[in-house]
Amino acid sequence: MNRDGRDLRAERGPVLRKGVGVSPSGWFDPRGRTIGGWAFAVNRITGLGLVFYLYLHLAVLSLLLGGADAWNDFLRIATTSVFLLLDVLLVFGLLYHGLNGVRVALIGTGLVPGRERALFWAGTVIGTIALIAAGLHILGDA
Amino acid sequence: MHTAEPIEKVEGPSKVTEIRRFRVFRYKRGDAESHYDEFDVPVGPRASVLDALRWIEVHRDPTLAIRHSCFHASCGTCGLRVNGREGLGCVTFVRDLGTTITVEPEANIPILADLVLDMREFYARFPEQHPVMRASEFLPRAVPPDGMDGYERFEDCIECGLCLSACPIAATTDEYVGPAALAAAQRLVEEPRGADTVDILRWADQPDAVWRCHAAFECTEACPAGVYPAERIMDMRGVLVEGGPRRRAPVRTAAHEGGGP
Image (cartoon, each protein chain N blue to C red):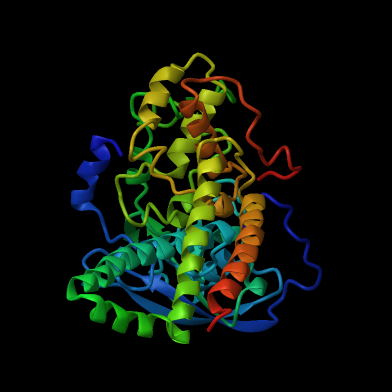
């Protein structure tokens, strides 16, 4: 926005934002969204989830500072069915964010403009197959 | 809604056949906060949201501020959000909506009153150093009114602002120039007609310009004029990634798909 536009903000009326009522959520409005909008929203949600997981993972690793017993106690919890389901959820987040990232990179660099829907469904097929395989592997021994 | 596609012909009487409830956003300068007013509106099978709003204005509340002109999706002045979704009031039909219909102004653009927007910031997003708004090549004998240097146009864009309202990134920062300005810039890169494309690309090659887009494509879905802003942004990225302007396969347009405003 040019300088004149910024100057106008001092006298502007209210600006409606989308979202779910909280100011930073303007990027998320489920009403009337199409595939691209949902793909973007889920990408951002999985991105936030993966950032949360990264710090959680570091916190879990810090249990090693408590010695072998502390780590073994954690492993007994981490191999329960509930935790393994969370692992499957993590794999979903990784697959979705990664595959959608490839999709956005392909269309976002202008290599395949206008093929965003086809790439979305291609990624969905690949991701679903990979998620099923990962789920069977993770939950197979549960 | 995507009105680049042919609008369905509706058979049947134009008389009133049912009552629909409209929840309409209200705000006047000086109000502490906005609110919604509800109106029961008699509608027929051919009624548009703009028809209903005009009925409210005439029969229930003359203070309701709405903006409209052409009634056929050419002027872009009746852009709204209906049940949360962007559309032109004149071609958004009541029959496709629920029994209670919420009508709000477009998002991400300042409100003057009720459903009327202050579009000055929208126009300020366009690059001031480039003639993105071209002088019209039509009606050479037309005399502009006082205060206007001449007639200008944005190619197919009808300047309705729906793309900016639909954009999830524009909801998070006012610094992003937005889909309409970038689509206009891409048109100049695609067909310069003497414009300085290097300078235009330099304007576009900024964090708050072409690289701020996250490829949600909601602008393209919302656009009623077949501009396809998202595809144009992606195309311009392609030009930038490869180091400069060059001929690319044409971005799809309404004309390619047999549609058009």
